[in-house]
Length: 237
Ligand code: ADE
Image (cartoon, rainbow, N blue to C red; front, side):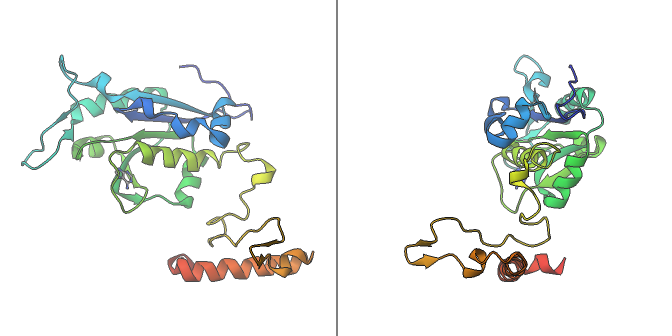
């Protein structure tokens, strides 16, 4: 695979996704900010069809769980070679298995992944994947939240989106990271724009005062209030 430098002069950040549904990609990742960055080759996306590594005439990828039980499990002897092929093209990147059992994904992990060369993302379906492939290929399990999706593809997209918008050159000055939720460890303060009054509700006076110090202090206090009300766990960190 050709390895074009991105238009910011660095090698492009590389996302490689192993999936049974490559048609889901780029999907929302082809649109807007992240889509424009893809066109600008600030990042690259390659999908690897797991079925291409399937066994026999039917390209079987899964089998019944050892020990019994419902559902199907993706086979290690299918996923192993599929992961190895993805690693050939994206050798330096960590390999992630998207799973509700994984480490909770957060902005700090997004920053860590965005600072690296890219990610190899295994999107599972069915009941799961054979534990041996997780162990033998050293996959890091990552969860996007305490709920169960029907597959890892949407979770893979969430990781890619959160990382790509942090890459140098993706966000313009107008969309700076400085004040967003989590960058300061706090949730974002409330925002307002014209009209000055809407349905009897006015913009807080301080925001129209032109007093930048007072505005900054108000925003900080609002961020702290909202974080304390909604996410006290963030204040403890
Ligand atoms: N696959 C299914 N549910 C998931 C979740 N919550 N996070 C990551 N991958 C998943």
